[in-house]
Image (tube, rainbow over all chains, first blue to last red; front, side):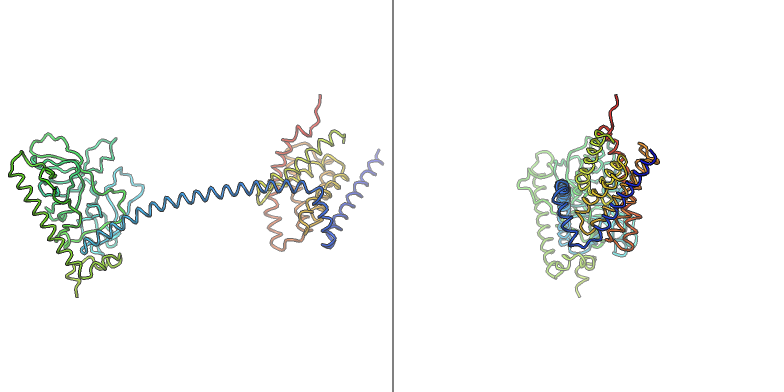
Length: 357
Length: 162
């Protein structure tokens, strides 16, 4: 038994030795001699294995290709989303350039930075990238191509902070386009927590009871109080608020500017505020008939109609005069400067008279 | 080994060899599972050392035929691993998961060590990186997969008792 085990052990060792020798000899053979042997193996016993490997690699290639196509489709989707954002931004910048061209001087362009992750539910302030170094002063009006944005509250050398029209301290004296109805615009603060979206709406208060405004009537700054120039669009009338007072009316306004869309703004300088911005924000032309006036005249008196018509005529005349003046200002090559952003920063803070050598 | 047991072992080895040429390229990992080595160790521990050495030689040659530059290196490595597995099983091999895993890990590492040295395809630092980084990783993965496959194939190779 022990002898058989010893013989068996020797046999195993001999076979192992032989196998090792064969393997070493095969690896030491020159390439010309190894190739036919390897080729014979590949064409016989290894062939089905290679076929299986080929199939598996095709599956893998298909899987990787599918993954690549999914990624490609995702990238295209993402690029399409970005292109929409770029189109939107482009449109806004074009509008801003248009506003710059209409203002021609007396403004400071700035970027509006929204602070992410703030705790307050309603955004009431905005950080602007222009400060006292650029000529920004406290209480400078901040406007967008659509209309009023807010008022500069704090000024640092390189930046400033503006309160939005949603801030509780915000006020602006306002009027209807035809100047027949006056009031003061406040932020709409007293809204239920369930209807916070209404918190961005405005209220036009203290409108004389005789001045009834229709829904959709645009409301502009009146220029009373000197903080805001006359004629900056604030918003449009949505509805009237039922008030216990009988001597005045209050209207809810939809602001012209959506705070979420504000990325670039213009800060108006004091000389520009003093000179006014008439014609910069388009005022609807005079209604075709007196009955189409934004303000419903009291009663049916012919006198009221006559007054309304006279106001319209005056406004049209004033607009025509302003536009002639604006055209004459544009002629002195200021418009070319105001189209380029860098020149806007450099040249738009002074009136054209000061810039002329 | 009885003929029935030998057949079952052969079937299990064939499945593992098939997995080497199907699942392995499908996964495409850098440190991949070496199903050939699992088949070699699995078959070797169930046969005599001489048969294990011959099995290793042929398995190695079949694998080497696809990489003619290293022809013979895999055969030598597989012969050594096969013979050692069969010889060592008599000493302390038991049907134990942990022990199986250790044998597979050591077998893979020895196989790669011999193959890398014999094939002479890597040089200097590359050899060190292969043997210290990639080989242990592949050995761990092979050991884990080997234990899993051996467990799954238990109904195929285990003799039924009444």
